[in-house]
Image (cartoon, rainbow, N blue to C red; front, side, top):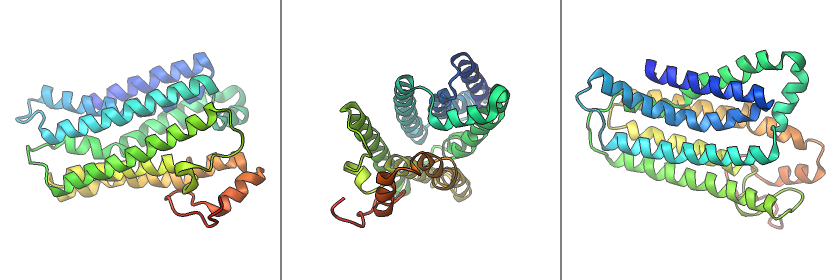
Length: 263
């Protein structure tokens, strides 16, 4: 992490914190999350410029910037439009009820600052290789990473579109078609997969850099599966018989054939 990226993301998250207070909607943090990675990527390149690095950017850096921009802007725009229509996410509404009059101050630390710290860690596959670019050519492992990223991005995008179309048609109940037939959270799986793929873009830079970047997707996957992703989202459906039946038959994360082929 560079001073430039820290300052840029710090400002970004405080802007969205102010917006959350004005709108009384903590869901705006979802938009800041996607934009934060873009800010880190370009702030790191800016750091290389002002520090006078011999190689400001190379093909690897261009690829990383492109992948991060495509993913981050797509996710930020999708979540912005979704939250604008749906209002504050039920998970944040629960926090608001629990925290009461202290919501603004508690959300600053437990929602905005916490996610800002997590963002810096998850973004290691972006910041570390961009900070250590050495003009090395893209090798087999890098192309493998790009391929994995493309698969993960496609899964996340298709899952989001399928869910969006399901809701747009006014269908009620639980979506069980498309990718949602094989995973209860295919969008989460796609996001985790693309970040694992991003790590391989640092392979040719150095094994120590590659190993360090693995911390990011490992933490993201842990949060999605065990902490703030699957568990918190499924708490909403704990008393829904239809969802509980769907839960018994369908993989929580990795897309797998349903246990009952009639689903």
